[in-house]
Length: 454
Image 1 (cartoon, rainbow, N blue to C red):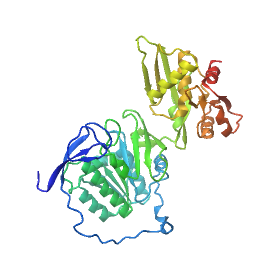
Image 2 (tube, rainbow, N blue to C red):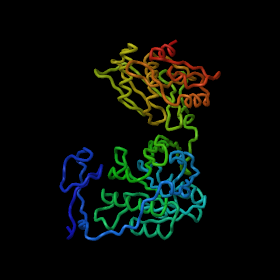
Image 3 (cartoon, rainbow, N blue to C red):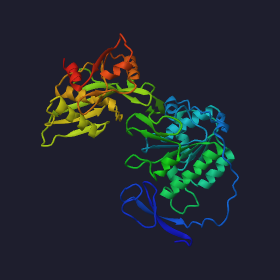
């Protein structure tokens, strides 16, 4: 070990620092997350005084004219960002390998450069030839976009100061290293310090910086949890690697809503926007099949119609199987318990499989009624009319509770040609009567089951 250095242990989950290895992290409670790193000994503080040259500013004196957003010409991305890119913002984009993070950001760079913005794309994983091969599939680029293959953060900082771009992309943060930190690239110290440097660049120079982050097997961004706290916006790219759809979800946004999602479809020429996700999710819906119903979920301000499928069959095992795809497993078990207790259905001897078609993940309580009716439809082998949509939260007493934005959900239902809506009776107060839609207000699950059985 070099003179003046010391060995410390960092938690890979939250960044907690300890002088010795511990089995459980005191900061986050996770087990076996400490890794050893060698860092330079810190200089003693207080050896010199810092001359203070800054002063506080009144709120009324803050100028907002320079914070106008830059649109990417990708409506789905602009929606998730809250209306566009804020100058000086630091955005983290995470997702599984091969999901399309680099492709999406290269498309953003192309659109910004065509709008006259100076863009710098910095890659620590690909060569210039690899980036160009991917760029040729996307389309034509102009001279406003410049590429740099570098991992040394000191060099990157000097290039950014010299070029003064409007937007910079770092692909990825795990490949960057700071010479002042002795640990290897991708370590907790390197990721944290590199992000700190990039944050100073973004805020100090007013440059919008996008950071690509790798994810762990649990789906979280690799590195310390403090990484997500440091950035302004965190976007997760979701979806099966071998499927065509992709979902961009904002889990943190200091400049907009955190409930918005953007839906994309992967093509040979890059990612294409899906401007009507409801229609896309309902493609291929079977006709005349039991165990299938359409429900409506809200993602931010956007209503999305999805198909819920259920298959209930007699079990050949002592303990029946319960499997879910796209929704919460425990929530489905809860709803089945409500059916057994309140509707007197004997489901304890049956296997149950619940799936949200299209592979999308939804956990909003408003889809409870749809899940419940799909299970009843499959159990009794009853076909639900293809023009019926059901939404509402189901309580433990079997009551159907109100959901928010009921009027927006009904408008989406009408737009796609559905004719009947099962909804909570208490939500009828916020609904405008429509001669083209038949409303079926239900107060409990017995009312809903009676409708599909009759």
